[in-house]
Length: 434
Image 1 (spheres, rainbow, N blue to C red):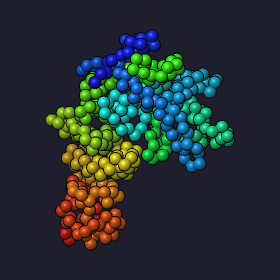
Image 2 (spheres, rainbow, N blue to C red):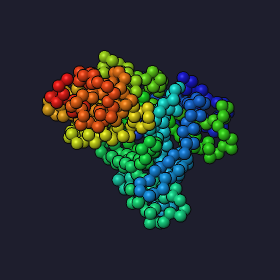
Image 3 (cartoon, rainbow, N blue to C red):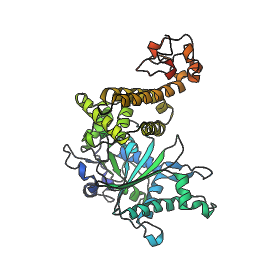
Image 4 (cartoon, rainbow, N blue to C red):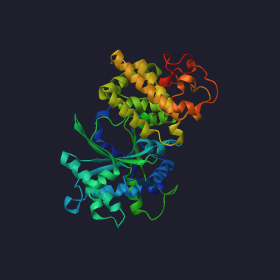
């Protein structure tokens, strides 16, 4: 993989050994993952990986606003530097007065940087590790982020429109704060336009569980790259680039990188994965990933199903979570095409591995997933007429606009509409003589 290649010309800027030591010492908020065993959890990035990281950080992101608020365009590394400066500035100067230990790239963008093959990613996840001892500090962080957004507004923007309340309503799509059971962190998600990458800013003091599966466990320290752009007069080149360190909070960097290359699903302490892990697991299956340990996967599925129904016990909560996941994690033509397959796989996992529900509750959830799958199938029916997908167009389906629009001949028979391709509610055996 070439993950430990270091250019000798960068020694004057950063020492790889010092970077590794610093990153280990600053990973105190990952204490629950320490001692997982396995190999080294840190690695120095190669030139190719640093170059991809530089491209990601040089990307101009669009932060879309609601209503008639303008879209803000900002280079990602400038956004990171600006937010960090606001966080560290004293309160008397409009900052948060918070000590930021380091800044990291996380999630799909980090996987894209490290993988040999391009990895599509829908969000840009950034982690600011900081000291947040009280809820008041989180309030100051929120104010600092909104304050920085105000500096990105066009100069002619009226002052009343750049108020914290207005900026929050216009540009923040999600805001989360957790302060319980050893977790102390907050999340601010910027961007509201479907089809564009949102930027998720996570401010972490302590977090017991930072990953779901090994392939999403990567974090890349950005401090050396940001310092390079501040100090260096020359662009990054094969013989002149900063030393950048990556970490896998899964525990073994090279093992996690192998899982990413081979599209394998693996995790540690599956009982700690929260309810959304089930949805992420089925999304990986839909994208061609497979279990690293097939003999253990049923146990993992039972854990994830149980936790999903603990976190989302009501049918309305389940619908809201599923619809939000489909909306936020399947963006773009190729991803949109995976929705039906994803729901079919989710239906199968819930059907086979749910052991914590009463029979009628389980049937309600399965019916919900079937209905969502039917909706996706009908929406894409013109593209899915070839096997193994079938669209029932018998007389009983006449009331379904999606099926009617997709009709292309005689009905193949309702047996063809049965799982694994969920069928329309109007194609139930009771209403369809076929």
